[in-house]
Length: 414
Image 1 (cartoon, helix red, strand yellow):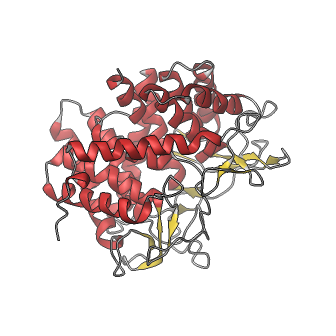
Image 2: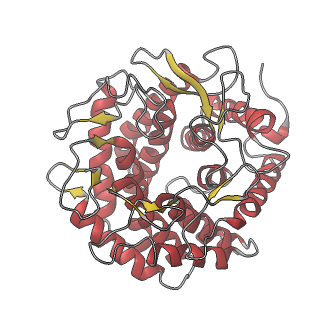
C-alpha cells in the first residue's frame, strides 16, 4: 500500500517540517557529549554520557562534524560544542609522539591501542566541516590529518587504503576492509570540496572503481573483508556474524551507503558530462536495489536486516539505525538524479518506519538497534553513541547531491 501521508513524502512542506523537528531534537540530544578534555563521551539512551565507556576518536570526529553543521544551521550552542570536540582532536586524542590519533581513551585516560584508518577518515571529515564553520584550529587540523593519512594509510599503487596499524606505526595489520575505505571516500570528497585539491576526488574515484568490480562480480553484494593483497574473505567472522565493525556476509546498509557516495562522486566529477556519470549512477542503482530487495521487510516486518549471506538470505535480522538513515539519504538522492518514482515511494516508506518504530519520541534521538520484530535490542549498539548518521538523514534529502553535506549546508546557510 502506498504511503499517502504528506508528512512522509519527499518534497512536501510537511516532510521538511518533520525533518526540521527531528534535526532540532537530535542536535539538542547530543549536547552532553564533551568530556573535560573535549573527547566525546558515548551517549546513553536519554543523552546522558556513559562515562565508563571509552571516548573514541571516531565518535569525537562525528560530533565535530555535526556541530559544525549545527553552527551553520543556527542551532544554539553548536559553536562551543564543535570547539570542544576540536579541542579533543587537537589535544588528548592526538599522539604527539608517533603522530596520528589514538583509537580512543579509556575512562581512566589510558590509550586505546592501534591507529585506525576508519577513525582517521573521520578526523578529515571533522576538520573539513570545522573549516567551513570557521572554527579555530580546524584548518591546522585538516592539514595535519591529510598529511598523516597520506603517509600512513593511502596506498597510491593499489588505489586503496590499508586498515589498522599498531599505536607506534611500526606494524601494519594484514586485514584490509571496505568500511574504512567507504568512509575514506566520504572524507576525500569533503576534503576536495573544502580545499579545492582534486587529487582527493580522484582518489575517491579509484576506490570506487575497485569496489564496483568486486560488487558486480558478486551480484551487487559488496565483499567487506579482504587479505593484505585484496583477496575477498567471504567467510570472515562467520562464527561472529553480528560483529560491530566486521560482520559476516554482506551488509546491505553499506551497499546503500556506497550507492549514495558513488552518486555524489559521479555528479561532482562529471558535472557537465551526463554520459560520463551514467554508468556510475546505474551502478549505484544496482547496489541500492539489490540491498533493499535483500533486506527491507525480508522477514515479515518493516526494517532493513543488518546482514545477509551471499545469496541475499538474512543472517542477522536486527535493524541498525544507521542503515535506515542511509536508506533515507540514498532513496532521496536517486530520486533527484533519476526522477524514478520508485525511489520517492521507498523514501516515504522509510520515513513512515522512522516515525513509527525508530524515532524515540520519549527520550530523543533514534533507537540504535531493534530486533526483527522492532523491539529495542542493545547487544551490538547499546545506548545512542552519536547523532551523525541520523542528523545527515535530516539534511541530505533536501541538499545538492553532488556536494558534501557540510559544503551544501554552507552554500545554503543564510
